[in-house]
Structure formats: C-alpha cells, structure tokens
Image 1 (cartoon, protein in one colour):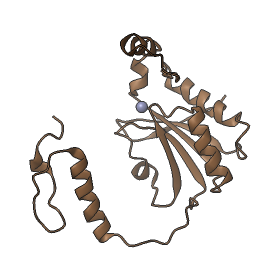
Image 2 (cartoon, protein in one colour):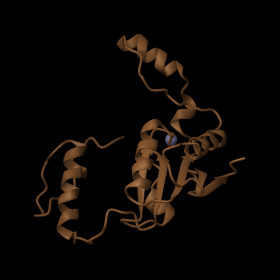
Image 3 (tube, helix red, strand yellow):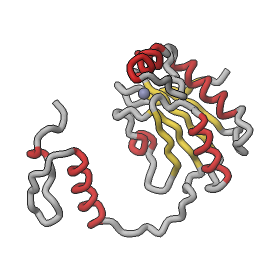
Image 4 (cartoon, rainbow, N blue to C red):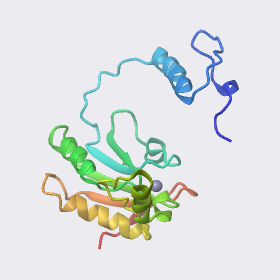
Length: 184
Ligand SMILES: [Zn+2]
C-alpha cells in the first residue's frame, strides 16, 4: 500500500514519463499540469462567502466537495482534530478583522485519530525526546462534546468581532453527511 512506485507518477506536461520517486515530485508534476490550464480569476483575497471553516486535517474530508465550495469562497483552517487552538484563533481573528469573514463553521468527524489518543501521548513524547511539548494533545472521547467546546472557545474569544453565526458539525466519513451539533 501507499505510493511507492514511480509507475503511478503521471506524465509531465510534455508527455514524458519521468521516473521520479517521491510523492512531492508527483505533486510538483501535477502542479505543472494545473498551471498550464490555469487562468488568473482576478479574485480579491477576501472570501466570497465571508465564511471561515475550521476542520480536522483528516484525509477523508474533502471540504470543497462536501460543502459545495468553489475557489475563493472561504478560508480553510485545518489541524489535527479541527481543534480551536490559540493559533486557530489567530487565523480567525485575521480572517474576520483583515479579510471580512463573518461566519464560522467548525467540522469534526467520525473516526478521528484524536479519539484514540490521550494526554499520555505528551508524556511518552517527553520520555522519548527529553522535552515536554508546549502544546496540549487535545485528545477527546466524545466528538459531540468536543465540537461544543470548540464552539464555546470561538464564541468567548475577545479577539473575534463576529460570534453570532458560529455552527458546529460532525462529518460522517462513511456517509459523507454532516450532523449539526446543538451548542447547548
Ligand atoms: Zn480527525
């Protein structure tokens, strides 16, 4: 399993099949094809739909396809778990105050890797490398409760100007459907 052979590397724009090995080589080749067909849409950096989406980095979650989004529509902020960390608040603050977004959508999902971790992960890390990470793992057991906590962190942030339209969901990786979480 995995991309280990050069046989799956797509042909370059000239039609030559370069026997290059790494996944990044493959991405760079794909980009050449993308750029060849690309025309500058002349867009402003401000998201068309005035929305910022915070989601887990999970590879099974294709946000644009799942939500009917197009290029330029939204800001996308992703990390392990879709956790509202200080750095996510930093991005949301810039998104709202400098780039005009007003709505926030939070998306966690079923089968998240963070459900299988605990804060022991930090302690094991410290044992292994001799240094305690400054960040929390933010592991969770109850995905609904974690979405509620994320909504609460956003709504109570003093840095955000728009906290009246904040909604949270769990994406089901088996059905592709979103389930909204009641904040109460
Ligand atoms: Zn996840």
